[in-house]
Length: 355
Picture: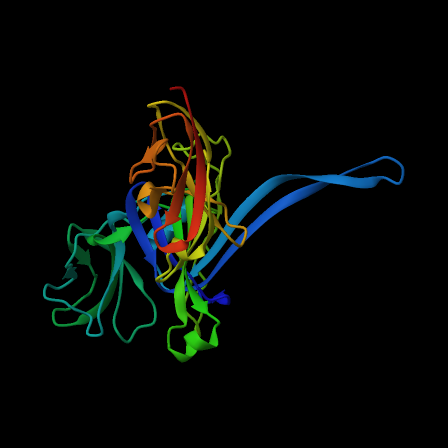
């Protein structure tokens, strides 16, 4: 594994609502991950010396900007769902609408009321000002319109093919499950020269990410409007763990082609000093010890070979799962070897009591 790893570029984001994948952020322009905590100093005694610090008010915030628009992101910020259909505006094309019956224009779509009244607007192409027209059903009444003339018109109608959201006056932003995926790169000259600089991924998993509800869509003549997705992680308890310590999420470093066995520096047997009655048995529990301040882990027996040491077969036996069985009173030894690196071993001492 390369000793020099760096991460760069915006993340890719996966947004989940319950079990639904509602968005994939592949066009993010920036992503920011930030933890914070407040420290209160514990001081006392002569000179008001510092004896410790009490930490509280922890937080995890994530700021995301997507360069592409997605109505679902706006909806999540506003705490609503996207629905099919919505009120849109019909606007005439360049040629306008032809008058076939004097005084009226037949509409293509079924209009809906504007501020409670079924109306539309019309003007001749060369005119500057728009006039209000009454609508009956799918007919716009245009006083004085002559057959063969063309008019520009506008009116509101329900478009079943559109998508819409409701912007409520009071709203609570949604809580999403957010996963950020960042690329890892190797800073090793050998990797770069071999065109293998993309080294792995950094995966940040935040099961409860509540958006802050702030949506700022800025339309300008010289730029595209970006969509903000900013929020905070909410603490949660892992239901599968006995540890009563809420968490905000996890961050996982994945290096392509890496094997955990490559980082093992030693083996540790939890029950290395075993005592058994004759004919009794017990399973060896083996932990892999890693360097670099990485916590040791229990590993399955399939990763190791178990062998009775020379001179110990009289007293004990061991199978390929690490189960030790007592045969006769005395002391025997079991050697545990890491299959992927046979130089890494540990030894358990087994004392058998009884006849």
